[in-house]
Image (cartoon, rainbow, N blue to C red):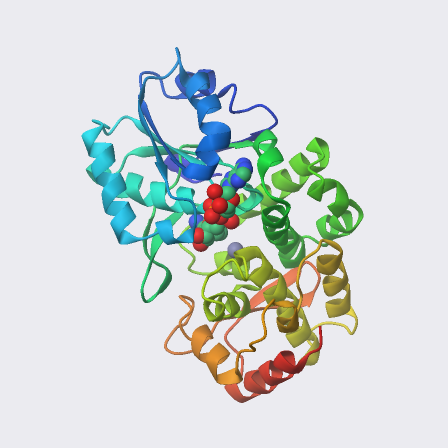
Length: 366
Ligand SMILES: NC(=O)c1ccc[n+]([C@@H]2O[C@H](COP(=O)([O-])OP(=O)(O)OC[C@H]3O[C@@H](n4cnc5c(N)ncnc54)[C@H](O)[C@@H]3O)[C@@H](O)[C@H]2O)c1
Ligand SMILES: [Zn+2]
């Protein structure tokens, strides 16, 4: 990820945790490390990381936070920051985040504020965190007002994406992470999308070569966008394809296991293409192709696919979209598409037109 003096490497491969001690000692001589993980990941993988550090990198401690989105809160951030200080973590040390996006975001924020900034290493353990959240430097927590509303930009110094750890990841989480992989094809790389149409079964079966290629292309796409626009003044917004619609659905479902983030993004991307097609921005049949692929990967593509009996109202969804961080002077930002692989950012969306579209979306049969 090319960011001048703050550039860093993302290593992708099968046995990177086993080699982490030597790799970290070589890159950051003399630094001690503190490992932050969650209870579920700790049970599977923390021992292997501790063993790998042994002899190469001094370990100041390991903390396992409760698993799940609720851990991304001020109370747990305070507990974590005080734990890091108590363990004597110094400016030159490393905070290692071993886990999914929840741990990466929380540990990254703690690392950003403790001693005004300690270096961090991301060891992402979900497909979502390997292709998305571990790269790019956005860290943060949720507040009662909404998701990711407090945080900091704090780039990691190294990312180790060990594809072997995905063996223990539940299938539903793998599919949800796959939605973000498909996103990179849909937003800017039609050839990658073609390849995904051929290869999704191999990726979801965690076949090492297919998985490594999917992660490499995804990270490459994200790295290029982040290098152009680190703080999301422009281009980086493309990464939010499917997220304006998706976040509203996630919030409506209460950020619960009823609808995982990646599942909401899958529905949101299908909606973005349906809306683009309705406005004649892209050719007829484009949205159907996107839906076919997402469904083949076992992902939902419309509101009716969300389990449970209740349906949102148009007003609820539009209000929730208004909470989006991308709102500027009251205008919503949308990522729409001219074709597969050709997404663009626009604020030119008429509220009434959007409301009519959402009303049709809510009526769409499963
Ligand atoms: N910073 C960013 O740029 C960015 C981008 C996208 C998403 N995010 C954030 O990421 C979070 C979602 O991340 P996530 O989907 O990785 O969720 P997560 O961290 O909650 O992980 C999902 C579940 O899988 C478990 N798990 C993780 N790795 C495992 C493994 N290898 N084996 C078995 N179980 C494992 C976890 O304990 C958890 O229960 C959200 O909070 C979202 O806001 C941040
Ligand atoms: Zn996302």
